[in-house]
Length: 488
Image (cartoon, rainbow, N blue to C red; front, side, top):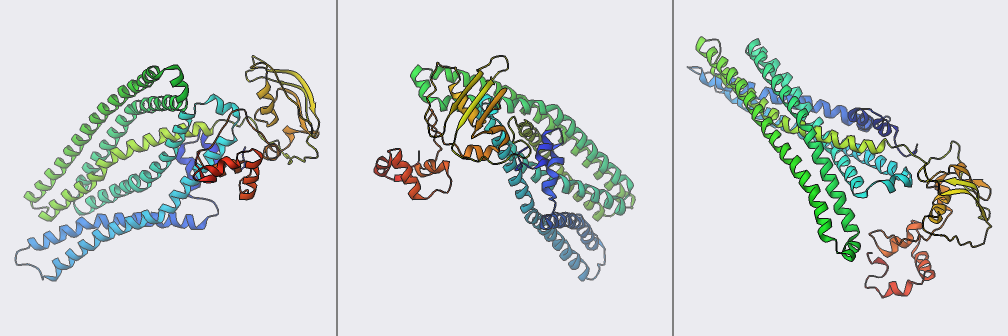
C-alpha cells in the first residue's frame, strides 16, 4: 500500500459506506483545532434552530397581546416584537457562523481525500492505466471530488439542521397547543420523508443510466478529439459523429425517464404537504371556535407548518443530490479499491548505483497469462556500454524497458541493476536512477521550461538551458516569441 494513501480511503473502497469512510476526515485524529470547529459548528446549529423555533412564539405572543381588548401596557407588544426581530437575526447569524466555522473542516477533508485519490491512481500499475479509457477515468474522478463537496454541504448544512428543527417544532406544538397537533405534524413529516425516500430510490437507476451514458459519450468525444489528426487522415468525421450521437441518444432516453420520475415525486410531495397543512389549520380553527385556542395559536400553527415545510420541500432536492453524490463517490471509491499490482517489498532499500550494469536472467513475462511475450530472456548490458534491441512489432522491445522501470512484475527470472534485484529496492529510487527518451513524444500542456525540467523538478534555468543545448533545441527555443515560457 502506498504510504501516502490514507487507510480510511482504502477502507472505503473495501466495502465501507462513504459516510463512514469520510468520518476520519471530519473528525481528524490529533487535530484539536479541527475537532473544536466541529463541536462549535454543532453548538451553533442547535442555537440557530432554537432561535428559529422561538421566532413564531414571539409572533404569537405579539398577536395575542394586540388582540386583548382594553390592551396591555404598550411595553409588552414592543418587547415581544423586538424579541421576534432579535430571534430572526440570531437564527440567521448562528447559521452563517456555523457555515463559516465548519468551512475549513469541510474543505480540508475534500483536499485530503482528493489528494489521496490522486496518489492512489499514480500508485497503480501501467496495466491499469493502459486498460482504462482516460476520458471515463477523469470523469469519474471529477464527479467523485465534486460529490464529496455536495455530500458534506447538504448533509451537514441542510439535512441535519432540518431534522433538528422537526424535533423542536413537534415538541413546541405539543407544549403550546396539544398532542394531536404534534402527532399530525409528525405523521405528515414521516409520510413525506418515506414517500421521498421510496421514490428517490426507485428513480436512482435512471440517474445511474445517465451517469453511465454521459461517461460513455464523454469518453468517445475525448478519444476522438485526441486523435483529431487520425480522424482527418481517414475522413471519418461522420463515423465519429455517429458513434458520439449513439451515446447521446442513450443519455437522452435516460434523462427523459429521470425527469418524468422527478415530476411524479414533486406532485406527491406537494399533495402530502397540502393535506398535512389543511389538517393542522382545520384543528386550529376548530380550537378557536371552541374557545380553547387564540388567534395567536392559529397563526403559530400556520407559521410553524410553513416554516417546517419550506426546508422539507427543499429536502427532496437535497436527498436526491445526496443520493447522486453517493453514486458518484461509489464510482470513485471503486477506483480506490483497485489493488496495487506493483508494490515495494517490505523493507525495500534505495537502489545503490555503482556503475549501472543491467542484467536480465531467464526473464519470462506476458501481459496476458495466455500469451507470453518474453520467454527465458537473458542478457547483460555492462556499465558504460550501448546496446540496441531490434525485432518485429510485438517482439517485446518496449516491454523490456517497461520491465526495467518495473511498471510490471515479471513472471519468472530476475532483473538486476548492479546485482540488486529491482523487486527488492524502492520504485522511487529505481526510476530516479534511470533516464529515458521514449519513442512517443509526450508533452505536458505547459511551458517548454516545465517540460524540459520535468525529469528533475526544481532544476535551475542554467541546467534547463544546458539540457536544451544537448538536445540541440536551445537556439530554436530562443527564436520563439516567449522563449522557454512558450506553452506547448
